[in-house]
Image 1 (cartoon, rainbow, N blue to C red):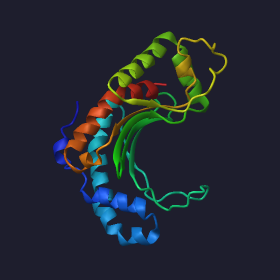
Image 2 (image 1 turned 90 degrees about the horizontal axis):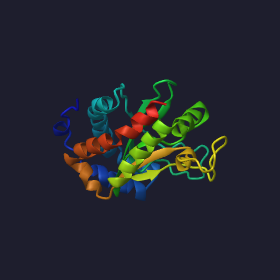
Image 3 (image 1 turned 180 degrees about the vertical axis):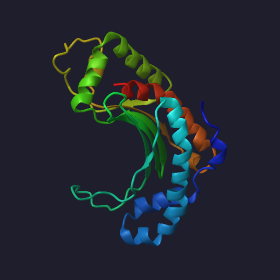
Image 4 (image 1 turned 30 degrees about the vertical axis):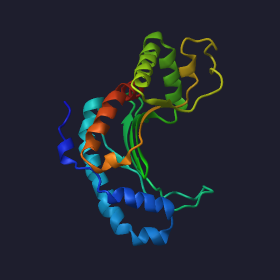
Length: 226
């Protein structure tokens, strides 16, 4: 049963967008340190409240315990040519673990950027036994048709389908397989793009996220059952 948590989250303070835009323009330690208190009050603390209110919603959608994760604002630049020290966005994920394999197969995603909001779900990188299980499920007529129907509905309501894919259908599946396009995928995500970031600063945000996650839940549940 969905929780009535929307009224308890008023949205992020307007300073959150101002901070993220400023960080994008001045991605340097001196600027961040001078504005660290704004980050804590306008971004970090509201994000923790937002996550806590969303966790029971996600658990209700998946039938599994939900533990959200707020990604660090500090970038790991050790192996990157891009040495900017900070992420000029807020990312929150709600991983969904495979029912049989105990690994993170997929999840729900929330991103707040200076100029947009992204709401998504799915899995970014299928590999090893998880990739084998995904392909076997796609190749099975009933579950393959189920996934195709889920993606068709997500597309119908305007969501964007994404994910890494091979150029060819992998062996041992035939090139003309009924679900060849799905078999070529090594990741599968769906996204709702919100071009007005100011929705994040009022109470509409919670219902927007809850509504998008409800639409995306069949994709997460299909992948989590691998």
